[in-house]
Length: 563
Image (cartoon, rainbow, N blue to C red; front, side, top):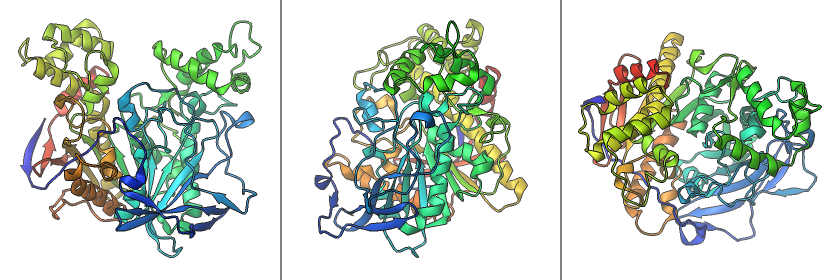
């Protein structure tokens, strides 16, 4: 729902990691075994990394599994993170893949794209990874700090999809990927002993680590761009608001995230009640438990096996009880994000994919909306059931929602009805909230008279190597292999996407260098304002500037409290 304005330039995208195996030497990254392993000195000690050559033409130095905090185990479980201590070994090996933070297994091939399906998981997980094209401490390269997605429930900084080798090599930037605690380990709240938002404090401590250490990797601590997707994009938006993060980065890229959407952070009282209900599963709250006072919950939970906590949490969340998420009303987020004011002192690029909702339909109704099989034929009358399951509205409100999105569609126009359902989910989950976030950001920069700008993008390209039904389109998360250059990891099928991935990496890295976003051929990309609502739409055949005109529809969704 937007009006055309003008412009052209090429676009594309890639994905398709089903059957992924890690054989880098055969795919584009060669590890040099010349006995000259790179060593850097940081505050905590020396690190030994590895030099990787990309396609025989560029290279990046990789340092993985670098601890930025003490292991959050024992008494430190459910506590804010504490900085890592200096290590005793003369040189610490930074060539190993660190464990992912505790979470459940996700039994779905698609989730191999970004979730650690069979990767080692541990509470001892507060590590980051660094890739740099230069190790000269005076290089002063821009830094791109990545926060992964996964709904604050899953995901990892230790998976191949988020490997920063290509982005660092082609973009001439230092790339850092950050691990942070998830689920109850990152967001349990009991008022005192478990302060909540531990996962966000993890991210903040990692940003402080970057300020203190990144010069050793050739990075400029004054030129940090924070970027993230989905929950990582939400986190990025929270850091734009959080008082303690203001001096830790200079720019931000928010990918597929509605930062100011209702419910993005929860009230402390609500999270306390949720934490109490969860703790009761372990005898740590209520009934005959000795831990009846809320401040005793975390103390009791620290005695529970971490794997058992993950297993119970999967059942608890699956029962519809809710999930552990960020809270507001604390030092990190003093005000509910949708009510907070952005400082307006940072350039921000924010955007989305064209079909955000199709993947979310798949994850919600996997038996109905398969990636591999032709979709079921669902008529308009049956769509009421799916809308009701998605949003838990009254029948009258569900009918109002259906009329808005499906009113002009025939009763048996299955393709159009399915697309309308995906559009509904995309609008409520990301798009309306992302536009609202962009409006608030743009107003903040205007009010601050800071000279900073907001730019909005929409990616709409499906690669030939995507192994899924065509109706999915470019959906939630499909831009990740583009941004990190993962198309270069595959042999055949994606060769046509490599130039486009280079262009996307250039767009992202140029923004990190302080350059205003432009099209691939230098086409003008106007800034987003609350009045213009202009954005750049990147398609297979080119690009054009459009203007969002979906405000009436978003208003209806807001009245229904859906965003």
